[in-house]
Amino acid sequence: MATAQKRATVYFDPELHRALRVKAAETDRSLSELVNEAVKLTLAEDAEDLAAFEERASEPNLPFEAVVKDLKRRGKI
Image (cartoon, rainbow, N blue to C red):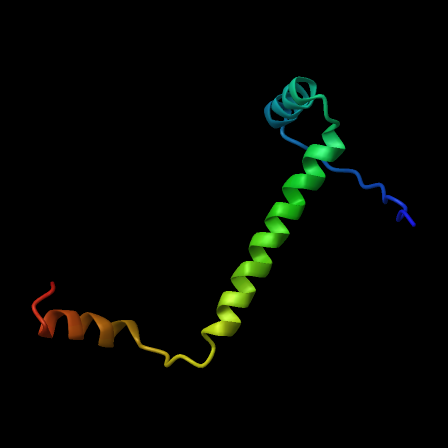
């Protein structure tokens, strides 16, 4: 069963809107399809970031100052 689409009003910068219209025409897709795809990709990236944060949650928290001091001590900077 297909889900009902929701309508939203989105305001674009005029130049961005023009670029979207051109891309839509060149790819034979609608503005809605392009925007939906971009939003999905952005949300997928966010999900990957959240998963990476969760994976690393148990790692020790190193203060920046300690890292810099260690690099200096080891002659790296």
